[in-house]
Length: 70
Image (cartoon, rainbow, N blue to C red):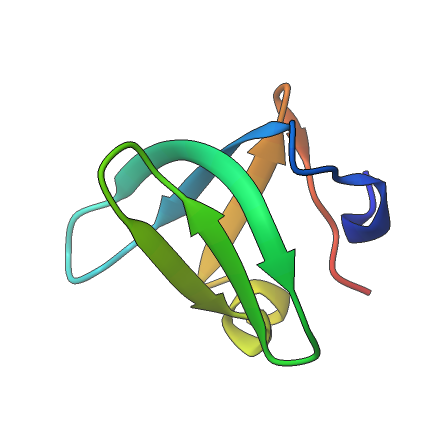
């Protein structure tokens, strides 16, 4: 699935590794620009760097299908 196919109504799962522990979070897509992607989680918003997503430091899934950043 491509990033352009995601809509604000879609629920996304984010897997990242903030230190030595893998963290899984679920939220809704808010906005994206050339450098950042913002996702609204249950109690907070978080901004992910697009460069981190391209390098595989964090992964995003929609309905168990990986989102690609080409």
